[in-house]
Image (cartoon, one colour):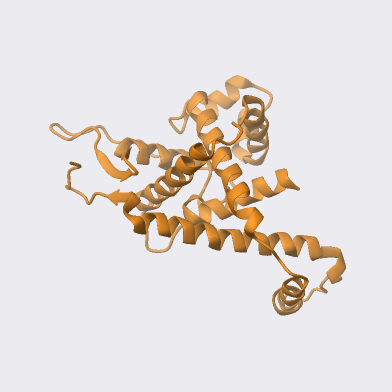
Length: 243
């Protein structure tokens, strides 16, 4: 159950800045135009507890998003969404390092990436699981190296592990909440589609997991907001230079 929860919590983290991975064929990342003469190659776009986030970091995050399509936040540009995901993930990752959690091992990362390869339909064309060259070629179309993908996924797993340990223990779901969700949410939705809802006792554990994720998501977002409100984050407007 813990492993399943860590995977499904991807939706929770990304709802706070990192959305859940969608199972669809990603389009090749658009080519980044060459800088014009006199144009800055890179610059600071945000500072998170003295840690710099560069424009190149945001561009890299956007390339990763081509592999892991994120839910679009209404009204936000792709650049703004990527920046906010980076800020939120950096805040969580900094806290995770302070807690000195057990490190995510190479074998754990490899296992998770194998699952990812099976979920990405375009990876099947490149035979990513069977051929290391296929995985490398698949990533190259997004301008990402194998090592970059490996470290990105390790950081993602570290973040999810921290969220599980910090917020999961404080989340509790009562039998009444499960019953209310079944009667007021699940049953009307199933009947509206012309179906018959399964007995509550058969799906109560799945309902509990959904409610736990919702509760943890709310706790996480409140926590991230409090960190931002404490002045931990400074975002620079276009044309504004970092001190």
